[in-house]
Length: 187
Length: 179
Ligand code: HEM
Image 1 (spheres, rainbow over the protein chains, first blue to last red):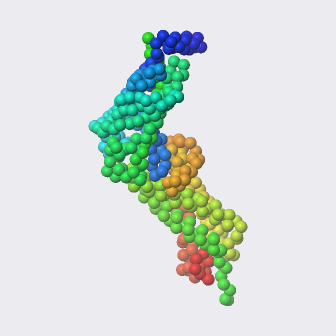
Image 2 (cartoon, each protein chain N blue to C red; image 1 turned 45 degrees about the horizontal axis):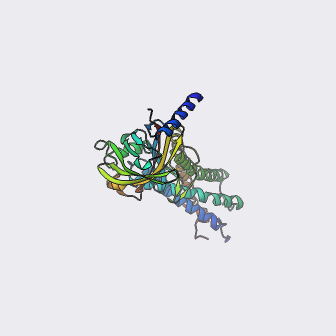
Image 3 (spheres, chains in turn cyan, red; image 1 turned 90 degrees about the horizontal axis):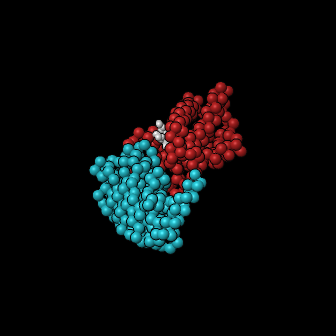
């Protein structure tokens, strides 16, 4: 084990000196996508179990980085069985008509240190909006770890129509938290 | 025979009627809300129910401290067995006044919904999230509430018996504006 890790690290470091390392093999098992909504002032955590993501990030050239994220909305865990049954329905995500949500980056900004900002377009339920997602990048051995969070306004995407448009019961602001792990390309 | 009837103290009377009123709102609200389909209205009613219940729990603390430090007035003449039943009912009512809201709070924690008092003051979760424990505590909350219903029924029936049959001043001792 140790030797393999060492060899891998050495390989990555050498690759780093030869040409830049690009982290682009997303490890779905280690990545996660969570969110937090507020119901009557009560923070309720949730997550999406299934999503696919492409990342291409070279810390030496962060502004050339790109990413896409596609979320299987039916894989939502919204905190309780009642809520899970409800949010896939017509007034919420309407997963029959719109099974996935998609984020496509349009650019990455370096904010200094290990902090960055991904700019891009988020499409949910047929609505596309600009999103700015600040994140940090950390290299752990052969893996790149991306951690970020941003606030999405559910009413921008008509998530929660009819009586659910009442943002005094379920707040408009939904905090999205992502933790993505991508390994360096095997070359 | 013109002694003024001994009365409960002001704070005891205030706590009695305030908590009674809150329970009389929380109870039917609990029965009504829990079968509703999920909706913003349901989320609101659940929150109101929890806030009222937590208020009962908060008021219970000074009430029981006051009760321990201030003996109730001596009973009016009545058979000993009746006094025993009345007193037993009162003690069990105190117990459930505490356990019913506490079981609600525990259930809410187990179901993964933190209680945020009036939507602004987050209360600590008493237990971690667990579906099994949540279901168990729900059954506990319901059972204790059934017990509360029986005891309140007995308590009210006893009070009415004193008014209608005995025609003594027992109820008046607990009324806010009596003599
Ligand atoms: C004086 C205090 C309280 C009273 C009299 C009361 C009474 C009730 C009653 C009668 C029910 C309906 C039970 C049934 O028929 O199924 C209920 C349900 C419920 N109560 Fe309470 N309650 C009190 C305090 C609380 C508190 C403090 C909380 C939480 C912080 C709470 C949370 C709940 C919840 C979540 C339900 C619905 C259970 C479900 O169906 O999922 N209650 N309550």
